[in-house]
Image (tube, rainbow, N blue to C red; front, side):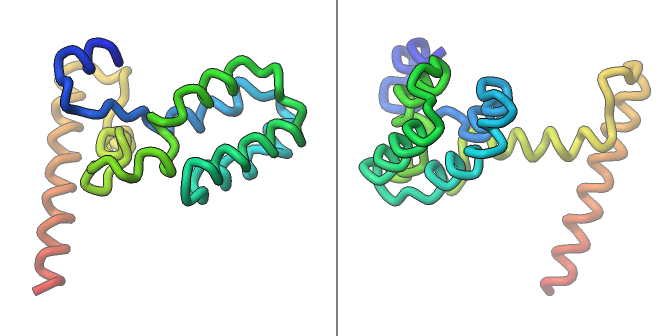
Length: 145
């Protein structure tokens, strides 16, 4: 996908979704390491002001947790310029992380629909969700006036 985007849209920046990467930590770290070091990784990722700070903190965590041989961590570190805020903060994104809008919509509709819904039920529930959202938006607009 990255190659196709670079070829098709050469003047764009393909940013990876930090949320999806962070979500995989529990899969690729054992339970004890995850419990003991996940917050350190989060702090390193979200609070580093510059790439050098991120790399310094990352190396420190890898050393403390003895994660030198974790292939997944090596692979996401190699891709850091596409997902770590300290690297991508200079890329215009209108304040959105890469799939923030999609994740937000997914969470909203998940309250109303299920993959088990039959088509007619899905349509009814989907329309109900949209009506609810319109009502919320109108209420918010009225309260601002």
